[in-house]
Structure formats: C-alpha cells, structure tokens
Length: 494
Image (cartoon, rainbow, N blue to C red; front, top):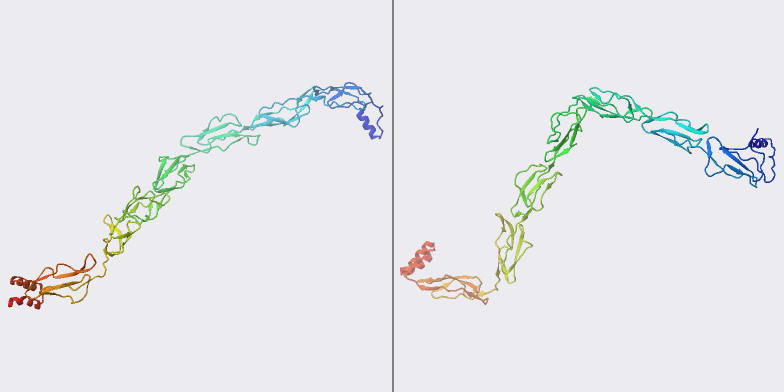
C-alpha cells in the first residue's frame, strides 16, 4: 500500500498528471513527523471536512493548540503546525562537570559533557534524548571523577607527612628534613590536573642538605641585623656603612644552597670631597688634606678686616653628594669709623674694610695731607691707613712793606724790597747793644688780608759788662765765627 506522497512521486516519475479533484475538494491531509492521523486518509475531502491527529511516541500535545486540520474552499488544508512537541529529557545530572547543547533538551536533542578542572570524564562524551517505550531518556550517563596522582617521591635525610594514602587533584604533601639538614626547594607540593586525564605534582620534591655559609664581613661597614657567627640555608644578614661611606651592592644577603651568600656582600666605598673650599674672607683653623670623608666638618676663622656674621656658622661640612656645604658669607667686612673733614667733603660708597675714601675741600680752602684713605685691618679691628687731612683757608697774594727799623740795630732784609707772606727777617744790634725780645719778625696777614709784620719788634739796648760777658761765653760755646766773637768782645777791650 502506498501513501499519498508515494503515489504522487510515482505519478510524477511516470509523467502522469495528478488526479483531478472537484473544485473545492482537498487532497489527502498533510503528514507530520510528530503526529499521525486518527483515521486512514481518503483520496479527497470536501470543503469543511476535518482530520484529527494524535501525537507520535516521544511527542506530547502543545498547550493551546488543537490537533485538527480543515479543508478550505481554496482546496488547501488549514495550517496548525507544531500542535505536538517533543518530550523533554530534562537536564542530565553530571556532578563536578557540565553539559552543552545547541538546540534544546527535547526528544532527539544531543548534549556533550565536560568536567571541571581537576576531574576527568568517565563514559561517553555525548548523550541523545531517545525514546524508550512511550517515554524519552538520555542514552548515556557519564560521570566526572577526581584526577589521581602517583605517590609523591621520597627524599633522603627527610620525610613527608601523610604519605600513605591515595592522592587526587588538590591534595598537598609537606616535606621536612632531619636535624642538621636544610630543606632546599618548596616544602609543599600539590597534585595538579596535568593533561586533564592524569595528575602530576606541582614541582619536584625538595632536597635535604647540610648548608653552612661563612660569617660575612664588610670593610668600613657593620651588620644591622642577622648577628651571629653560624649561618645556614636562607639565613639573612643586613648591612650598613660607617659614616662617610656609600653602600655599593645589596644591603641584604641570603645564605643559599651552594654555601654562598647571594647576592655577594656589599662594599662600603668612601665618599670623598675634594680640597677644602677657599674663601676671600676666612681661613682654615688647621691643616687639611686634599680630600675629606663625608661628614667631615672644617672650622674657619675670619680673616683680618672681617667679623663673624650673626646667625651663620663658620663650619663647612662634606656632604654625601661629595660637595661642601657652607653658610653664605659667614664673615662680613668690618666698618671703619666714618671720617670727617672740616670745610670739606668725604667721598665714599661705604666705610667697610678695603674701601678707599677721597677727601675734597670747599672752594677757598686747600687740602693739606693725603687726598685719600683706605680702611685697613688694625689689631682686631679696622682703621684708616692715614691720618685725616685738613682744609686750610687759601689766602690772597699779600706783600709786606720794608721791615720796621730799630735803633742801634739793623735787619738783613733788602731795603725798599717787597716781602711776600711768610718772609722772615733777622735783626742784630750794634756794638755795645744787646737784642731784647725775638730776633726775627715774620710777614703775616691781618684780618683785612693785608700784609703786616709780626709783633713785637725786637729792640737793641745798651748791654752791661756782665751781659756782654755772658753773650761772649754763649757765642764761644755755640761755635760762632771768630769775627762775631770779636764784635762781642770789643767793648770789653775798650
């Protein structure tokens, strides 16, 4: 017996035209994968005829849909698709794993299984929702088991804890060494997933060795921690340098398995400043070499002419950056007392040590003395190197007339001559007369700027024999010429 679809295919292959149905009639009802007609199909159906279906095994009625189709006036059956849907197998149970699917979990669906990290799949990798009787089931039920590891390795001169058991993913074992031995490596290793089928240990088993490192020492430095004389594996020592030295290398070292310190102990290199700085205003208090360690302090004293500045230190320090530190201008120039000059001016910017001042006189006055002075060091202080000059009034050109004449005497001035200011004439007396008063007069200036001879004018008085004798003795004692002595002696001889 052929179905309607088979007859249509057969007719088409024989080039037979399809059977003709009366207008309005429908051919055989449609066939569905999920349902089958309740009654055998007929060759044709009148308009309005219906066909009821029942769900095939593995399928069930869809909610809200009727399993009936109707013959319409256009000779087609009404569409009412998917009135039966596949039964669900539900999510498969796979502890410590998961399943993946591309459509749904209904009849005919396929899922694939994978296990969580540390577990491996036992059974088929996939399952299909299949029909068994009138119900659906997954045709495979794999499971995930923990990945096992082989027994951990044993070590010499040591042991591990909990070594007599089965080992699976995630488990750990811990090693320890016998007394006198150091554990080299990780003391604990773990069972890891490996290739997701067989486990493997996270690392090699440690070693138990005898480790001894020598007592580390650093020249120009010292230990700041890790004091002792015996050192074993993983012992650490830290260092610091003495003042004036810079640590070159690592300040912390560790005793390693090869009985050496890693990294090697550091060196403490000296930090040196160059020659002591020189200042124009100060000098060192003692001798210093061409280089000095960092932290070295040098003392200076102020040079003559300078004094210590308030609030500033005269100590210079060698810094760790190999430079000298110093307060700026810790010695300042001392100050001379301001000079004065009557009837004149002092020209200067200041009166500090080393300064040169200039003196000038007002109009009508003439400078007497040095025209300048310099502030120089003097004892513990400063002073001017020359005495202050003075300003002398300038007098007009004056002349004195002939010096006054005196009785019984004469002067050595030229008769009728003009005598300039400051000229001096000397008087002497005739024989038998002695000079009374000053022996000379000077051409001076009176308050009206006129030339006059100084007072008093000398006089010649008759001398007694006693006076003449004394004059003679004085002349002889003074080494006067013989002619002058004879003149004095002449009255005595008469």
